[in-house]
Image 1 (cartoon, rainbow, N blue to C red):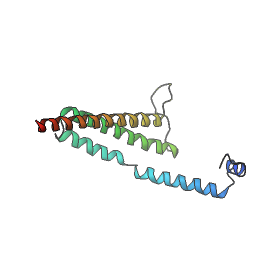
Image 2 (image 1 turned 90 degrees about the vertical axis):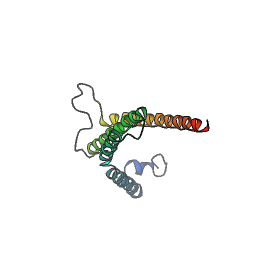
Image 3 (image 1 turned 135 degrees about the vertical axis):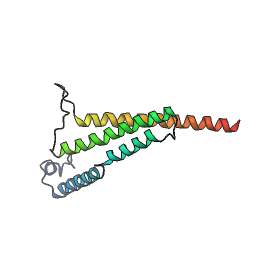
Image 4 (image 1 turned 45 degrees about the vertical axis):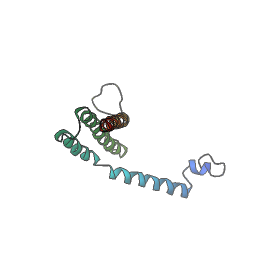
Length: 139
């Protein structure tokens, strides 16, 4: 609607009540979703503990899963920091980095990407193991 000839001026000036209500509604839903994710990093600690204690996977798979879960832990933790920074409760920049301005959101995105790549590698490795197991059973 922002580019609309009829309503564009009103929307850009934030004077269109229906658009303002829709944006407020969207923001409320977004905040609600973030609240549900607030303490998910605690689940990752429990999963890390299980992966370290239980020996149900082979060593390469356990290592991949531990690294992936660690990335997930850092992702959820930094996601909480980004949320707090958006509420102006803390700085959006990582302290003690020096002259470089590194944002928490950048760290969150890096760990999200890393976890996704690791999960793809884990899936491919699991398929490889299943195929090997299947071939062994066929012989």
